[in-house]
Image (cartoon, rainbow, N blue to C red):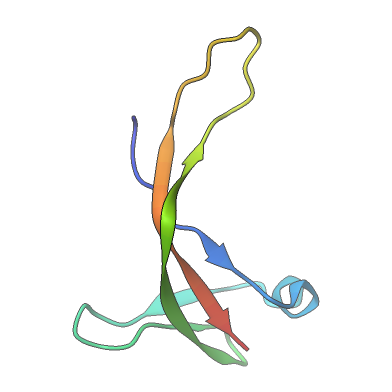
Length: 77
């Protein structure tokens, strides 16, 4: 496996499409927020009971796992 991925759940795609420059701000001891030039949203980490694996398209019946996640980040609008 090449590496872990970060999975974000975004509830309102119209809002996301209107924001061009995103920045994640925070540390391990602070709450993390996602910011743009005009808005700030909180982020909540949600643990999943199962792992999610990232598999790119394959030309044959051989698949290679390129990433995994056992939690996701929910952007709270």
